[in-house]
Image 1 (cartoon, each protein chain N blue to C red):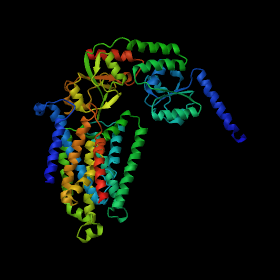
Image 2: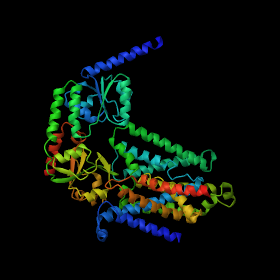
Image 3: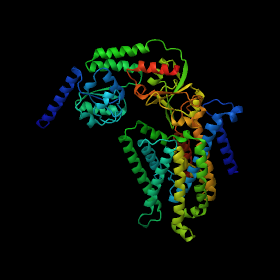
Image 4: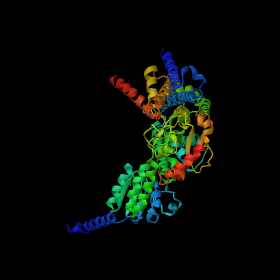
Length: 272
Length: 313
C-alpha cells in the first residue's frame, strides 16, 4: 500500500484539478475544430485559446495561436503540452479515444459536433458558459435563432454545391451549406441526400439540372474551376452557361456565427 | 459456341451501360443526347478497355509467378500510383492530366524497383522474389503516402484516396482515346508470348528444355502486364478482383492455353467491369458506389463457386 501512496496522491491531485476546472471558466483552451475556434473568437474568448488545429485559419487572429496539428486525429501529447484546462473536440471515433486519454491526464474535455446552423446556436450557449461569457454566447445564439426562426422563403433558383470533381462530390441535406442556400432562397438539388456530402455521377448532376453551381473558393472573384472546360462536365447546363457561384472559403468553409452574413452574400450573388 | 456467348454478353453489357443511368433519356432520343455521347458511351468503352486490360494482366501474371492468388495490383503498382497522386496534390500541382500522369509515373517507379529486386543476386526474375519484392515495395509506398497525407497541410489530400478508388467516374473521350492507343502495344506483346507462357506453367526446367528463353519471357510478360496495369490505374484508379477472378473464370471455361485464355480474359474482364460500373452508377442512385466494391460483391460469390468446384474435383 505504501508503494502506491505517491501514485494515489497524484491521482487525488489531478482529480481535484479537474474538479476545479469544472467549477470556474476555462482559461487555457485548446480547440480541435476550425468552427469551434471561430466561435471562441466570436465570443471574445480568443485570448483564452492556447492551441488550435492547422486548419483553424479564421479569424486571422487565430493564426497567432500555436498549432497542435490535426483535429480529427489529434496528437494527445502535443495537446497536453499546451497545459490546457479545457480541450474542445469534434465528435469522431478517434477524438473520443483522445478525449478519454486527456481526461486520464486530468484535463477537462468537451466533445461538440458542429455540423448545422442550429449546432452553432447550441454551442455558442455551451461555450459561453464554459468561458465565462454567457452574455456573448446568448447574443450569438439569438442571432442564429433569429435567422432560423422565420419560415423558409420560396426558392427562386436551384443550386448544386460541388466540392470535388474526381470523383464528383456534392453537398447533401445534412450540411449547413444546404441550410444557407435554403435561407438565401435557393434550393439545393441534392437536399434529399441526408448526409453532409455524397459521391454522385456527373450524369446525376446533369439530370438534376441546377441553375447554378456553387463552389467554395478563395474569393468571390475566383474564375470557374478547370474542370468546367471539360467536355463531360459540359453536359450540365449550368456549366455550359458558366453559371458559377464562387463562395469565399472563410465565410462558407464552416458552420459559423457569421451565417447571416453568408446568407446575405449568397442572396446578393443569386440576384446578380 | 462459348465465344459466341461471350461476345453476346459483351454486347448486352455495353447496351445496358449506355441505356441505363440516373438521367431519364428515352431510348428513341439516345443517339441525340449529350448524356449518351459525352458520359455513358466513353464510360462504357473505358470500362471495357480497363477491365479487359486487368483481365489479361492478371492471367499473364498468374502464369508468370505460378500463383493463383496473383492480382495485377499485388506487385506494388497501386502503392506507387497512390504515392504519385498524393505527392502532386501535396505540391499543389494543377492541370487536368496531372493526377493520372503522376499515378502512372508512380506505378512505373514501383514497377522499376520490383523489376530490379527481381534481378538481384543473379535471380532470373524468380517468382518468389517478384512477389515478395512487390509486396514490400507496395507496403513501403503505402507508408510514405500515409506520412505525406498526415504531415502536409492540404485538406485536398484526403481526396487523393477518393481519386485512387474513384473508378470510372472520370471517363472522357480523352481518356478513352489515350487508353485505346496505348493498350494494344502491351496486349500484342502478351498475346505473342502465349506459347512460352504455356511452357512456363510446366515449370522453369521443362520450359528451358523445350527451348524457352525463361528470363526473356519473364521480362517481357512482367513489363507488359505491369504497363497495362499502370495505364488502368492512371485512368480508373485501383479496381480489385477483376484481375484476380477473371483469369480463373477463363481457365474454367476455356482451359489453360494462353492463346485462348488471354483473349477470353480480355472479353470477360471487360464484361465484368462494364456490368459492375453500371450497377455502381444505378444501384444506389442518386449516389454512386466505388466500382471496386461492386467488383468485389459480384466477384467474390463467383470465386466461391469456383473454389467449391475445385475442392470437389
